[in-house]
Length: 156
Image (cartoon, rainbow, N blue to C red; front, side):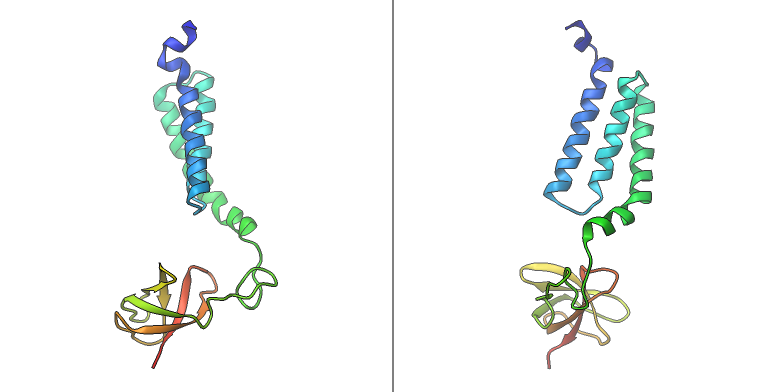
């Protein structure tokens, strides 16, 4: 038990706990970003296990987290996102958001995006026309590259 009396000897356990915490946070709030910091913490924990200094562990954590984020996020997101059909949903699934009403909560002034409130959640929205706050809109489609952004038209 003498081994655990020194912080240097248990730094790898601390990094392990941080890494697992980040990974669990990713499960709770999926955004496919936090997981890379969890992996970075696990890599820093491995360097701590082999006796590196705290400064080196922090550098390894930062560099590995950012490198993993920049190099793998787009690739891994495409793997876990699934494929989209012509209707915008997952393969063989209809996108029920198309045609649904929403309320503008941040004005839309092309080419700048605004925000809409749809089913109790706020979403980015774009349109070909200016739409003021408070106006009711109808969702026309999802943005082809960002499925969290809607294209809308004002209801007349």
